[in-house]
Length: 159
Image (tube, rainbow, N blue to C red; front, side):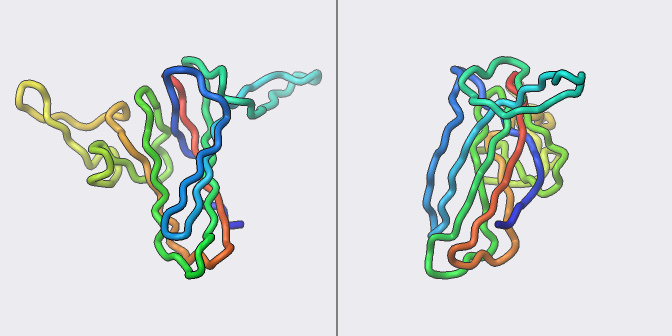
């Protein structure tokens, strides 16, 4: 199983959500998405322990971890797979991973957040901020042969 990226960030807000699985098949690629809340507790020896729990009780300030598993269920290799996820309102992304691209216009344009400017209500322009991000994407540059799988995981903070 290939592992692409490292823990990045994505959040979910609104009504608490359970750890979920969403399946999507495009071009023979199956995507399965799961969401967890990372909880930190102290063990009997005073050491911090991180555990993943169901995201059904996520609240403001909680750290979410989203895991996207992908698998080529088609009969042909796939090249340059783009894994794209919508970002719920209120998500505070960790933008430190250089492999992650963002969009502030529903996926029409992609880049780093610093590349984007948005119009203001008074006719000016301003730099895009993390709250403006609508979608996030990663490209898997390697060829994905039939039956091959991998995963992406990323983080978010619920605002």
